[in-house]
Length: 147
Image (cartoon, rainbow, N blue to C red; front, side, top):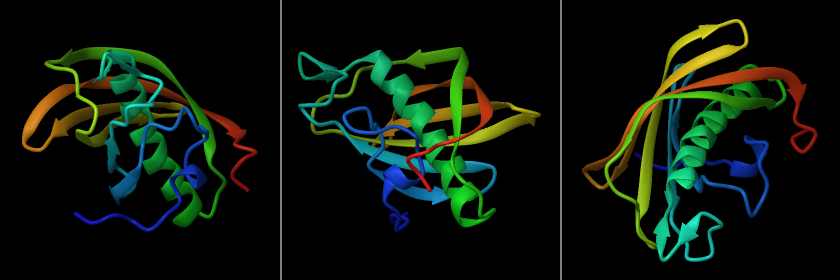
């Protein structure tokens, strides 16, 4: 997979230092794949490990990047703000180390009105380090940072 040419902050509502996606690798209306290289100055790094909250936020932002890209580039809409409303069956087998690259795939399981249920798989190379599902509430609020 190669990177989709886009400035990631144009497709997500988050801003540094809270951006947990470096690159969008693939996207369509049902799925997205993104990467993050764990930097030593990341706000979710403790003792040179990317903690659980960072993995959760990275998954949510992978989903946001995919939805934001589709909204901007396919549907010609503005990026909408969403909120994580539930986490289901999240299993994290190990924490990433500084310098490791997370590659995360999210896919839409259900989308009913403003609620989306997504499945996520986080890998470092060929090793799955986290997987689970999330419910995301998508608002009608347009992100003012992404005109």
